[in-house]
Image (cartoon, rainbow, N blue to C red; front, side, top):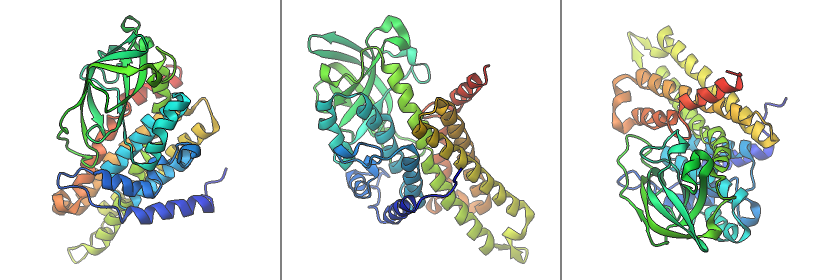
Length: 377
């Protein structure tokens, strides 16, 4: 069992970490625009795990996670990193595994180069964790499907060029009657709403997406009809294992800042880091970071090895990183005191950015259910 990174992995991570600090700033509204995406693409971020024949990096899950971690450790906006991860893991992996060759050629080159942005349109107002409640329908009509319905909280939607959309093709079958389509933004009947106001991850814009009589050519059906549930679950294993890696990068920088502050800040005639109440808090932050990092690396390794336990490992990893990211962000605010609550310093923003990790890609409660079932409960 080798816990060290290879020289190639180190060089790749160093390259990304250095480049992440030179990205264009987000817009006045905090949203990372196409200039940010194209700059990230120059580092290879938008095509990490996509096939090399379409311009991607051809990386496995572990190497993809290492790159996401380095990206945020280098200073990339957390919302931008989240949007890129969703573009890759919830969308790019599905197109790679389930699109026909013409659609792969049409879309994957653009996704890899960052000239096309993908969004995952699954969640609805009444269908979050319960996939059997999808109200969006897709009705076969000759050589196309007619989509009707509304999707909520679609990350990347305001910028997206293609939407991976899950819809009920056999509504009476619940989650066994769901299919997935790649829906180009240019198709008539697709409307993207205004960006949603969020409390964190501002760099990744999100919006509602509505389909009204949207005719989608049958070639954009991904995988067999009514097999969308299996497609979705496989993509979620990748997303749950790899996406939280960006928070490892955030926590690494966060801890470094807290340690530096504890050494510099003086109260009662000495640095606050010499007080056990502060030093033990920092030690606990380090423990959370390193233990969750090991679980995430193990989950990604399970995916790369094709192990059946990958779903359980991904659930363990996502839960551990979510708990660590929120707890560490709260501890960072307390270490910095009143300064940690100021918007300009960015410490409070880390708490706002960490909180949704308990919600997206399957809530922490759903992850604990996956873990419990793996125990035979």
